Image 1 (cartoon, rainbow, N blue to C red):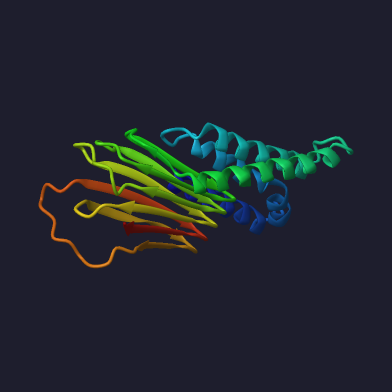
Image 2: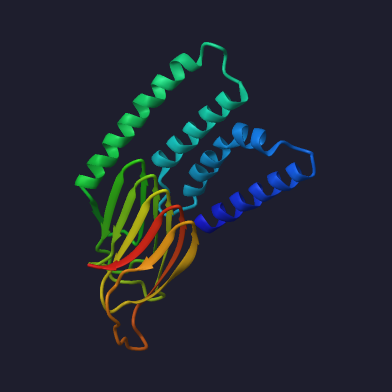
Length: 222
């Protein structure tokens, strides 16, 4: 989904600046008012991941909607006095949750795994016998998915790794045929595995599709 988000964002920016050049819009004014829509779209995009991170996605969408209403002047004049302290409380609670999750990484035997880190760290590991798909998303944070104790499904596996102002890392075991690539937009996509392996033709195959927007996506052995 990171590819779709990056594509939509670039198209939207291109349209805004094109209409600005045509004299139809003021690009600066449009962006200053509507930029929270990017947060809303980002939260909604996470709901396409498997398994769906409902709590984190809905929090992101909620923050985006609140900021959008504020930018558009849809709040009553005195409402913002109560909204911004509430946002601070929610942000603090979320950071504490991310901290707890980073200190107590979850281990699952599910065939589908999702890791979402927003303004914090999140780690998960899989020991599934037939891992099939997953997502690793870091937004102003650090997300890790450890597959070193997992096995792959007969048809292989797929991972969508996204880093937006953050770092996403996927750990894989030796002996897997990993196809790793993606789209770096002012970010880095790095294969940090040292050395080369000679793999049999029937080696388990994992496909990792990465998007890095002012962030880093890394593939490592563990």
